[in-house]
Image 1 (tube, one colour):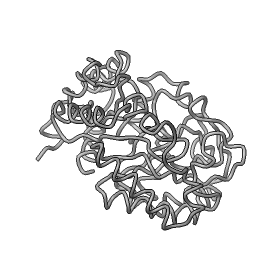
Image 2 (cartoon, one colour):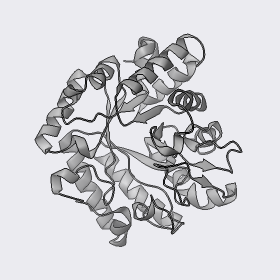
Image 3 (cartoon, one colour):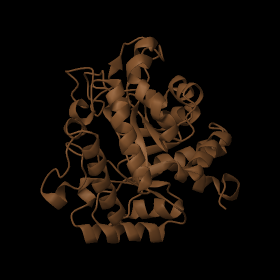
Image 4 (tube, helix red, strand yellow):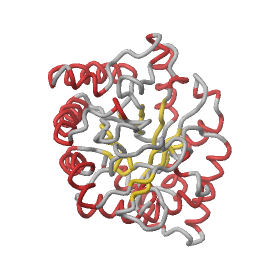
Length: 327
């Protein structure tokens, strides 16, 4: 059985990354294939990769055949505005979380079953869903109908159905965006939102779904949002030691902690290396980068060098690898 002790440092660090590629055929991206053979931990697929079901299934097979180990094959397939199969259907094929919830629990379960069957057919094993954000801000430009409700208990109700259905179908569900993106008025793809709620307010509403469902989730994605209740420094939750410690210790979360896409505006005030270094020291287990380009591969190599030179403790890498292998 594979353990952190049986892996090289290079394999361990590559295992901490989930990368995307721009082409339809992964073989066309030499950097991506190099990362895959070096021990890449996961792949994230976007609309650009999925133009035809059979061609995509072939791409997934190529990735599996060139990966030295089990690998997370992931997608953002929420329904509504966030679907990666738009090219297959000429647009959105599933209802948004809000619209699905309006049809009731049975429909939410049925739609999740349909999505699961499609992901199984395509060969995928991880979905960045459900959205567990409580949509309390009517001016929120990025969450809105991606949330099941503005009521935390409703979010828990539907989130639980979605999580259970994915797990029954062999899909790893990833709850997002901890500790709650629902009260923001800035899109974290563009810039870092700031949430100025007290810890009491966060726990009463926004953290509540994560607290309730933490034991059911294989992984949680952390937001590129600054929460004043956690940090006085202007730092996003995605690389905050206080946020990650809270998730591990207060909520007793035992699954994977994954960053949101590390090229988003919400993290741009830090260099790529500084952001990853802070994230690793904080306890983030995996980082998403949408493109396996030269810059991203150079970053991974720089992290390997920083571990070798003692700038980043290897124990933090081992800790993450053990969480990854466990899931």
